[in-house]
Image (cartoon, rainbow, N blue to C red; front, side, top):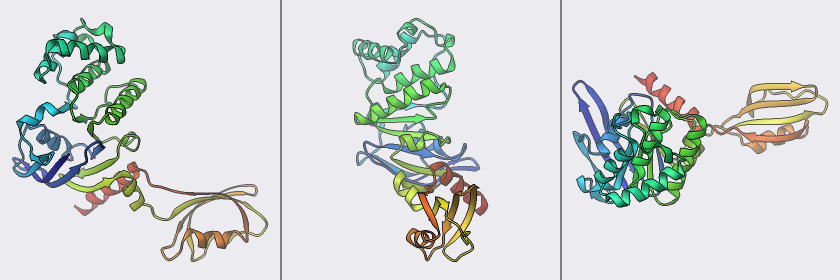
Length: 305
């Protein structure tokens, strides 16, 4: 759906984006990840045509990105942009009309979303009288009201309590199920694995990792396992050539070990070594989380500079 090719953006003495190329597949939830100041917001502003790249190209459905594509995009910025003195209802109608909806159509859609998110009583409230989380709900509706094909969410859960964060997360998943492509920009990893099909990690203005979440996690597996067993007599010699012992916890004859298998061996070799000596109850592979991979890659980038 969206292809960013060799994007460069320079601000005075700071290069915000340095030859960044990313492909965002249609119908997926795409996580745009990175620490604060990595370049995520600069990239989002370029996609929204708020600023232009110094070099590089962006394609939307194989066409060069142009102003005609704006009405197909919904954007929830990290810095919320509601008019504080306006009433919620009139502001929402105004924003909907900017996206090409008629007043009648806007009222119909707003009625649906206000009921769905349980904010029907907010219509005549002023924005300044709403809490940060309440304002966030209003702006979320404004972002999706015109049924955009591409929805860009920059830190969408900031300001929400856990209950409302879960409500919005469920709405994001439903929008995606109904065909919307979603870019989810965040520096917080807690929700990435629940939401995202694909990710790209940006740090210090460069893309340092991208791909499908399941493929990236598989790539970073390192033959680490937790094995629970019951000792049957003699002590197991963990000082062997098959694996490295990372941790050991014992309670009477119940033992749990965390191991990392050496490169030339497989799990079967470990089991063949242990089974004659112990009664194995459980074997579980340690799969790195996206948070673990994020920390590892970002730390590597800092160490290289």
